[in-house]
Every structure is written in structure tokens, then in C-alpha cells.
Amino acid sequence: MCWANLTLACTCVYVSDAYNYFMIYGANDVKCYVFFLIDLLIYFNGVERVLEYANIIPEEIEGSVYPSDNWPNKGSINIQNITARYASTLDPVLNNVSVKIRAGEKIGICGRTGSGKSSLTLTLLRMINIIEGRIVIDGIDISTIPVLTLRRRMSIIPQDPVLFCGTLRFNLDPEQKYVDQDLWNALEIAQLKDYVLDMGEQLDTIVTEGGDNISTGQRQLICLARAFLRKSRILIMDEATASVDLQTDATLQTVIATAFSDKTVLTIAHRMSTILDSDTVLVLSEGRVVEYDTPQNLLRKDGSMFIPADTPTRTFSTVVQTPQNCHDTRPIEPTMLTISKQSVYPQHN
Image 1 (cartoon, helix red, strand yellow):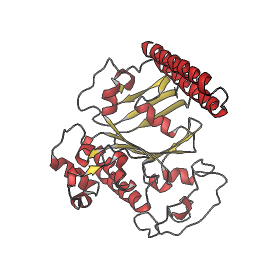
Image 2 (cartoon, one colour):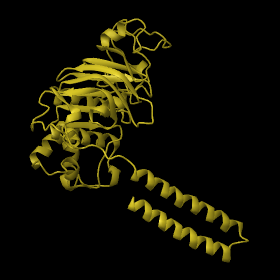
Image 3 (spheres, helix red, strand yellow):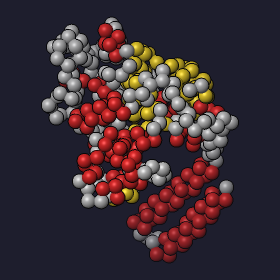
Image 4 (cartoon, one colour):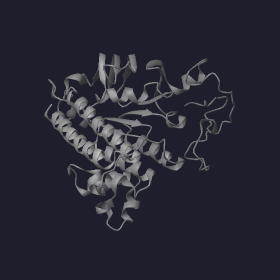
């Protein structure tokens, strides 16, 4: 509470000085009076926040089980009846969710906004509180593992790629664990090697804050190269292709299909084309699992939430139009894709 008391004392000193100034110079000045009230509110808001932060219960980062250095060595995930929420004062965002994911399986996760897609992946990293149930990865309950160990053993590529101010080498390997050859191999797998070779400083090229001097698509590919370097058995892609063009989306899917062929990949979908090649699709609604099956079975299922009821039925030719053979550079829409003869490609949020 010492910081809270210090902040409160500083605020009181400021208010006292401001009040004296106001009484001497600005008693008849409405503008001065307004500025005084605004500053007063701002400073007391600061006190309120410090008091709130001072009472936050620290995250439990320690654990009772310390897995081996190669854990997880398979990548199987068993989600058992979990209920999760962001805070004790809020309603659960996931309710009684149970999913079994085999090692090396590619899972597509879809659902409307607020259905719990990102929340489900955050439970794997223990970013939100699980109040019921448990998650077992390769036979170990993740609630018993130190938080830092758990998060270091998985990789996530978010919708907004994260790059740091520094060299490209630092962004790929911030802990300096790998030699240059490993970095070049990762860049080649991410199809960035030629691009980096054309840079004057190559691996020592400076990346500005947030990667503003690199395009969005290239930032995503750098994050993908970083994930490959970590050699994590579990990769989470949280709408990683939502803000990139069709060509970059196709590149990402190609890299994932080859470099991560033996890894467990969880993909939250923005474009339906992203998860059509998944082994299994998980459909969420209001924090609950409503469907869990192969994409082909869900597309053939009558009344499937994978195909919203208000979507008009369309029939396509036998030619499958995918990002690899589509020459249209516009952002792809679900109804632009072809799956197979007599198949319906749904409009899905």
C-alpha cells in the first residue's frame, strides 16, 4: 500500500497548490475553474487505479510439477469439462468445454464474435482463470506446471504480429539461443530468405518499434519463422491471417502444411478457406462446443452451425478455387470459394 499512499499524498499536495493558485489568480476565470476540475479528476482517477492495482492478487506462477526439457514431445491436448472466466466478478466465457485433440492434429476453430474462440486458446496458456475442469497436455495437468515454463513450450501467432525495436536477429532469437544458420533456415522455411538477403544489413537490419518499416504480411511471416525456431509441438494461430492479403494467406498455409506437418496446430479462422484443410473443425457458440467434426461432414450435415441457416445455397463446379490458384487479389470472401461438386461454402463470421 506504500505506492497508493505516496500517490494519494502527491495528489493532495497538487490539489492544495492548484486550489491556492485558483483562489489567487483564477477565482473569476471560468476557464481556470474548468482546468482545475479536470486536473482534479485526472489525479484522483490515478489514485483509484493505484489502489485497485495494489489489491490485485498476484498470478500464481509457481508449480508443483517440472516437466522434462522436451515436454510436450507429442502435442496431445485433452480439455476436460473446463469453465473459465476473465475475473471473479464476470460471467464465464467458456462453459463445460470438452475436446480431445490428438498429437499432430490440425484443428480449425470457428464461431461468431464472442463465442469463446480466443478464450479457449488463452486457457492453454493460463491467461484466464479456469474455475472448473482441467487441461492435460501430454499427460500433465497444466495447472501444476510453472506458468513461465508452460508458456515457453508453446508458440502463438496473434492477429497483430508483435515485433520489437531492434535487429531482425533479435526479433527472431531474443534469447540468443541459435546460430545464424538456424536463423537463415527458419527464414527460408517462412519464404523470407530472399527478402532478407536483399536488405543491406540482412540479419542486422533494424526493425522499428512495432515493425512499422516492414509490411503486415512480412511481420506475420517473421513471427512464423520465430515459431519454427522455437520448435514448439503446439502452435496457436489466433486469426493470424485476418489482416493479410490473399497471397500472404496462401504462403502462411503452405508453410504451416509443410514445416508444421507433425505439430499440433490450433487455428482460429477468419477466412473459411483457412480451416477447410483442417483435420477437424471445432464450432463454438456462447462459450460451448456445438459441433466437432471434419469439415466435410459438417458441410454435409443438415442444420449445421458451420453453415448458418440464413445463408443462401449455392452450387459450384468441380474446380476447387483455392488461394494458390486464385488470381483475384481482392480479400477473399467465403462465397468466392469452391469446395467440390454440389457443395455449399457458407458465409460465416
